[in-house]
Image (cartoon, rainbow, N blue to C red; front, side, top):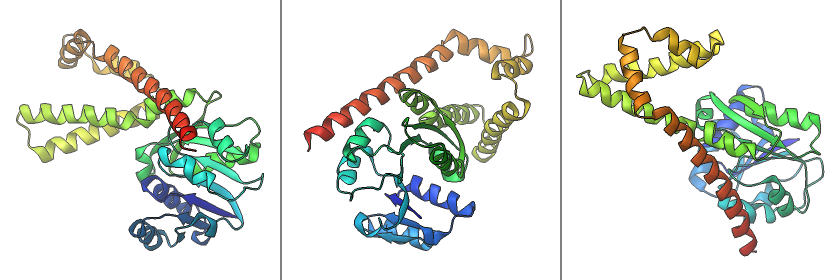
Length: 275
């Protein structure tokens, strides 16, 4: 059975690369991509079959991965031929609820919704997964293995929890990049050369994350271990606390989650209006 990707953007390319690296045969992967340049790039890089019309790719499909932009998804899936009940549908389109997707697919309910993030491009992603109640365990595991080909994956029991996943890990890389920008700007102000500062900042972020992962201790515990009384770290953290940085981050991520809910509702409404 084939894995068919509808959409051949960066995330689809990352997933295809991860699957092939984990033993998936390229000839069993098909990609529907209307942009000729993107289709050619996917074919050259991964040696998969590409086509512009979904109808040409749907023969003997076992897994259908929906990787188009959320605002395009309704029109794309409504144009698909009827799906067999055992076809696994995995959607990575942000904000689109499984109930809406099932309705657009004429009641098809073998659907898993996934929220991967940008580091999947280097196989260091983190994804949240939600499955409709009727999805068999075997198919849940299949979706999980697909996401784990490019990083880690966790399941949530409530679909609304994917809004939190979107806010925390989906948007999370942007928060880290933002903090890295601040560290690099601080290094520049203090007179460090840009090349040296870049190495220090990147390896500090990577090393701190790896330390949390390997040691298994809470970040707060490790932070206290770094913070000597009366020392440099304490001086810096005191200023951050005074400025309310931690509470601002919590509020910012709550705002991102609220926006995720809002966009999901709006996309569903827009899809109904455009019918």
